[in-house]
Length: 115
Ligand code: SF4
Image (cartoon, rainbow, N blue to C red):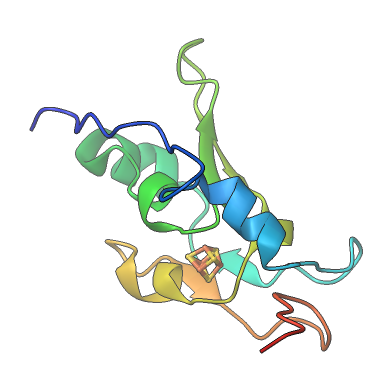
């Protein structure tokens, strides 16, 4: 399928993902145990990337998952767990059910003080 060509966020009606993560006040302690675990760390690059262009890059609303180094021919799957807003989409939507979302340490995650 051709890649969709989405318009850039205009900052009025549409916003980029990381600006929205900033508004959620999401935070996790730097030294807490990782709460996004891969059952098999090889699957994102060996299976999901060639078959589906690693959909975690797109379905995660917080941009937690990235493929880096693809242009250099050495792709790596990077998990920026600090930004996770606890929606659990990855736990459900990964094509091979390879991502396991476990409960993070208390106090971590999004914080909407006016809700
Ligand atoms: S739980 Fe939601 S925000 Fe967190 S990594 Fe998974 S898809 Fe992204």
